[in-house]
Length: 74
Length: 159
Image (cartoon, rainbow over all chains, first blue to last red; front, side, top):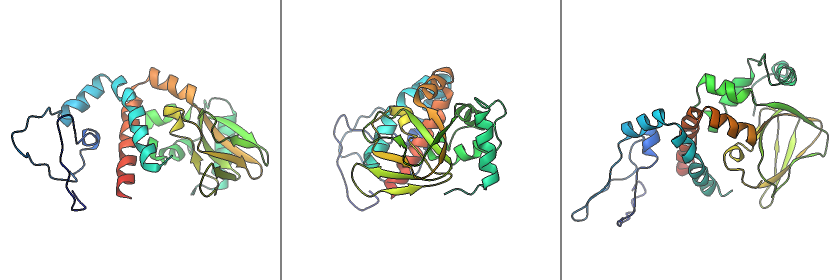
């Protein structure tokens, strides 16, 4: 990670959620520690889905607000 | 703090007072555009949010919102000053162009602070109920709001 620390991920863990919205540069390199199977959602397909079904974006708002509040401590 | 002059503020007041802003003041949408939550909204969507605003006036000492109460509206200060007293931590003063309660539009969470009018205070108020109605009516606004929230998360992560 950017601060030099590392973390290991387990089945059920995830990363890159915010990248679905903004496509920002990755803050870390992620390497397979052995054989690894993932489910991947491409940003293009996600944004297309939101355009077609914007109510999904509305449904994501409370979760995003929760992240903001947690980071802010309010 | 605000960069718009007193003349502009008075104009916004008058146009909001005229009722649900048929003739929306041209300075009002840019004020909303500066709120990070709204940063990714299109001009048309900003206009729809802008039209929800109602003028609300307070006298010295009046409570605008009370800590612990349900977050039922977003406020922008058009004229005057307000004192923010959080349930914990340091207070601060707000002036013309400052705003608070924008996240409450989305989650209605309890207020983290009491805000009171220092003198005569004029605000533009957007109610959570009206905002949620707008989101149902025009869910595409939700895409822009989500993008705004992601940008806020990124800036908080960098801080």
